[in-house]
Length: 186
Image 1 (tube, rainbow, N blue to C red):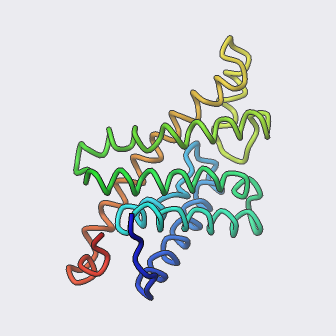
Image 2 (image 1 turned 45 degrees about the horizontal axis):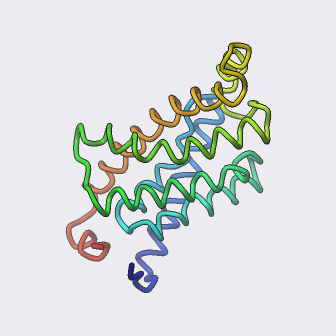
């Protein structure tokens, strides 16, 4: 797999994605939404630039948010790295359109959900800054236990979040000017 040289356009796209991730994460955090909205920029970059560059925005925005406003973001940086990589692979092999976003979101969600549910269960005992914490605590008292409840809740919220990320990313991709699409062609 050949990686091209990082250009000014690429750096600007990654910086733009970090801003989108930061703003989306802050909206979800302040409104206590059960979804995260902190991966829209990552999905956008991964779908336009590929898996290698797709790993960077969530890693960098996770570090930025973790050091400034939400310490939990720092611990979930590996999830963003996996999300960006898998999204880049999915878009490299298959360009999902319209209803194709739903199965693509499923493919993208599963690996990152496994990692994030383990982090949530083992590192934080099911309690994070997300609005889904309440659901995890309720389900933890069922036969699912802590890990099972973290996985179920995380999968549902991650899937909805990824569908939204893919949809917003598709809108952003269509908004790119034609000459810019040629610059970012993989």
